[in-house]
Image 1 (cartoon, rainbow, N blue to C red):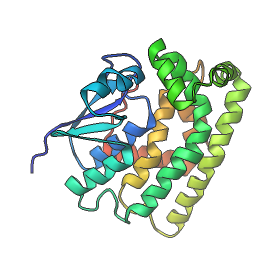
Image 2 (image 1 turned 90 degrees about the horizontal axis):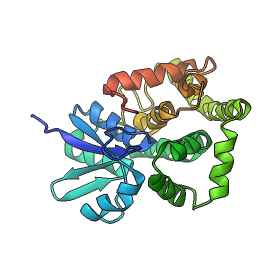
Image 3 (image 1 turned 90 degrees about the vertical axis):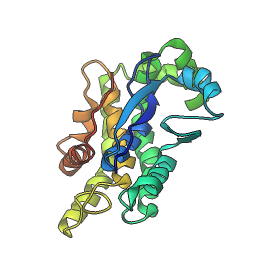
Image 4 (image 1 turned 180 degrees about the vertical axis):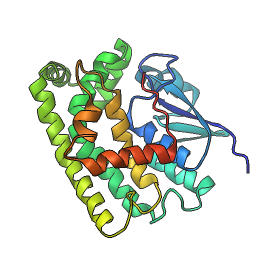
Length: 250
């Protein structure tokens, strides 16, 4: 069966920029790749999402999003469910949805919570002012003092190292899980022998980490490919290879 190309909408920094810098659309990109669904990436800025694009599509839309006829599907987990129902055949949830949902929650709350202090100040400064204002309102509750403090903090290499160590401490749990799977002859992916949405749910944060540009800082090397996390480093490469994802970050 020939599958038509879909358009995946992600988070861009400027209008007309067909990239994605946030974690969530990369989760969906992995899912599309695993299902061999061809796609093109279109970026939407925070300002566009909440103004012109929302008025053209549906109230409350976010990225990632895919249009299916008159229907818009958004939110990375709901998109995974939609793709599984339409194309999957239990490929995205080979062990059911519970493990994928658990990892998705862990990645967004625990792991992402430690990445955001490095990610948010970069994103705030990298966007155009109207998008930065929407980002501040939606993601940080309009707390200008908080974002100003983070922007100042990431200028200190010691802060970046401390925060990177906090992220690695969260990833140590994933390293131990991968090691246990390896010892039992399971894996090499998080839900078995093949990559699935369980992997995509965490991998999106790896991709978002690579988007961050602090002078002289490579968060990929400092966090995900750190010598203390050899299995995590191998895993992120294996997921990207399995999904065939090309990272369009800038």
